Amino acid sequence: MPTILEVKTPRLGTALPGPNAKRVLEQDAKFMSPSYTRDYPLVAKRGHGAIVEDVDGNSFLDFAAGIAVCSTGHCHPKVVAAIQKQAAELIHMSGTDFYYESMPQLAERLGQTMPGAENKKVFFTNSGTEAIEGAIKLARYATKRDKLIAFYGCFHGRSMGALSLTASKSTQRKGFGALLSGIEHIPFPYAYRCAHGHTAETCGAEILEQLEGQIFKRLFDPEDVAGIIIEPIQGEGGYVPAPKFFLRELQRICRQHGIMFIVDEVQSGMGRTGKWWACEHSGIEPDILCSAKGIASGMPLGAIIARESVMRWTPGAHGTTFGGNPVCLAAALATMDLIETEYKENARRMGEYRFGRLADWTKNFKIVGDVRGRGLMIGIEIVRDQRTKERAADLRNAIVDLAFHKGLLVLGAGENTIRLSPPLLIDQEQADFAVRTLEDCFREVEKKI
Ligand SMILES: Cc1ncc(COP(=O)(O)O)c(C=O)c1O
Image 1 (tube, rainbow, N blue to C red):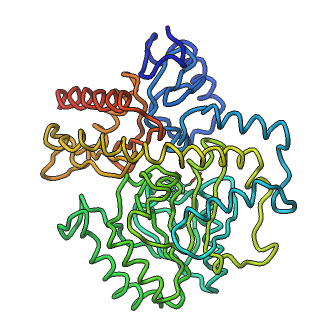
Image 2 (cartoon, protein in one colour):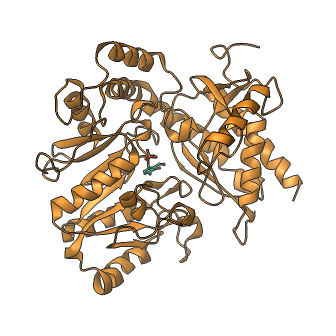
């Protein structure tokens, strides 16, 4: 079989899982925490670009990118070189107690990408969850208030603070007892299922009325609210974009009451939508922006980026041992170069190209209820009946599994959505392969119902 460097689309040589994969699965079942949620038995060995090879030599086209993380593809030579160079020079120092060049360097570059003229300051973390956890603390610290407002369907992480904001699936909370108090959730403007029949541009006006007319009048005085946090495009919740007007109105409400407007760009950021941040498409200027996932092409890094006038906590107020590790920062600097020069634009172009083809899916396939997203962040909602919009989680799962057996890696999101979040470097041939494969899967699944 050709090597991973020679292929751009899948090559499958064994039944799945293959014999080597089976051995790993057995060991995994015996020793790994059962809380992981693997959809299919891919046992990865190496990756290159948008291709992943398993332990049996089968290669797959990766439209999951390690949950929207490998923004520059797997093992981009420039990212690998930056990691290797840095690892040979300095692996750890702890930015909490010491200085090193790459910290302010990356902070300056990240700050410049965040909308708004004011200078930005940055706190580096190890993950998205930690960025959210820090953002909760920063919002409380900056406002001297404690209440927070978040949205149903949003996912912000799994530590106790971040989990208190997360309202995606009850399994993520079940059994863990009391979480942070003082958090109220309101509906997310989900245009495909808009209770008021609005469009993707207008859905959500009633939610804002509820916030101002009910929450602020009956539950939380706005002067007690530290922050409102939103994903501009819901990730884990099903790749659901918030309408532009909705984000702008939220910002107006935040400004009016001195509430921190916190945008969670952990999944939607770093060029995935064709701009650095998904919130740029709405012209908003958040007070605090959280990033992680695609920021360092797979090295563990997150960032809280905030307006300078907001990030004014005193020494010792917040810290971390590993966050902003030099090797992760080197990977992030190389990642930013690549996204800036090539991949942000490629994400925009490939997104547009693909949307052109996906637009007909709701006409051509009765199980496709909705296709939505921006750039290379695309959700396909699978339903049993387009008229009733009954969610078809079983059919979605069958499609994800079938795609794997045809060599295409995709993941589910929400109850019944397929998410496409490939590396930002995919080309037309790979986009076409993914489209054709999914169409084959839809046809096969439709035949069985
Ligand atoms: C929008 C969003 N916020 C926060 C997180 C948590 O990030 P991490 O898994 O890196 O802790 C995720 C992870 O999926 C996410 O999608």
